[in-house]
Image 1 (tube, rainbow, N blue to C red):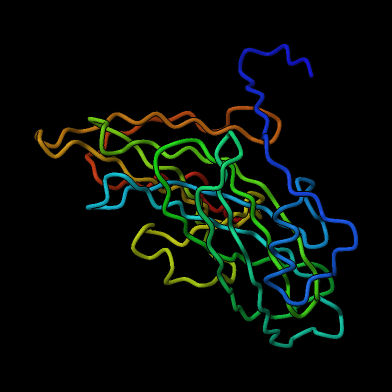
Image 2 (tube, rainbow, N blue to C red):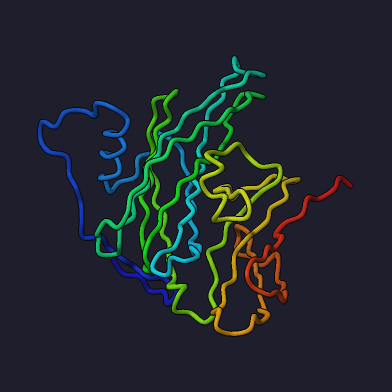
Length: 263
């Protein structure tokens, strides 16, 4: 493969688990998640969008908490209009190094209640957390929708900084929206992220989107203010926000989009 761009990096993985001839089909959801996680080709049976961000863990210099948001698309049938629809999603997040070595795995169960308002699709977020050492990782996320009997996979790259060795550093960025989508389990990330994150990246006219991140500084020095530059591009690559602010560590939030009022 030839890539003639300075801002693009191409990486490969050395590991691949192929199904064995005559292998029996999965007997349960966990076996199904294990099977699709081992497949290098994403499975599109369940539409997914993933997002991940690394945050410092106080008192754990060799690890960082990676907050994972998995956006799931749920079809709503016309017959369910006005009904409350319980949804259970089991997910597995596995972290691999760039060399293909597995460094962590976490299983979670997300239970949300959706309301069928019209024919079409609706969305919700399922959360997971992995504590990982500094490095570059590829997260392979598999999810199984129990009621629809559908399974999907998605891959997300994440860089975990060595927060303990940096004089000043910054966590990953998470996006939160209001009004927010149904999500679970909410308590899972409460001690890591100050807001309820979402994998949603397409916003409606009156959505209020917020980007949140943490700033960290070496505790051996007096706390200093940080100059922060913010640049946001739309789907066409055009700069729609070009701003700056001055904040003091440890936590800041930046509003990316305000709801537009009717004219």
